[in-house]
Length: 108
Image 1: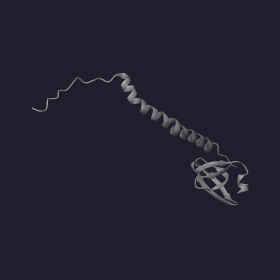
Image 2: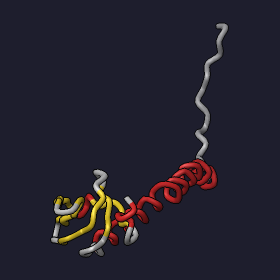
Image 3: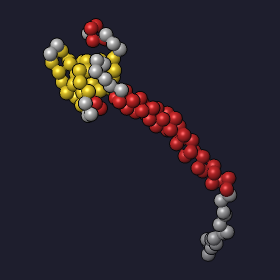
Image 4: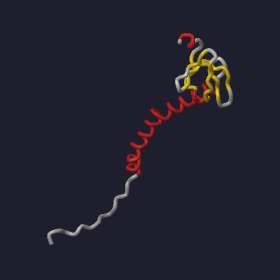
């Protein structure tokens, strides 16, 4: 015949350093994701929750819908925001996005 028979050779066992080197890129990518995406998002969430817990009457806030106003009443889940003279809106605490410095609404 023209073609010789091919016989299977002895299988090579991977060394521990080969296994570590194959996992190294995966570990590096996870580390980059942790420090560039996950960790900053956890920090922002923690700051947002702290700000919502500290809401009190008289604070000037902006909601996620874009309403700017002064808090007139704080409840368990909702806050009342005075958005104009005599006009109040009830919004969920979680909708409050930003707390403004005092006196900001006078400039608007």
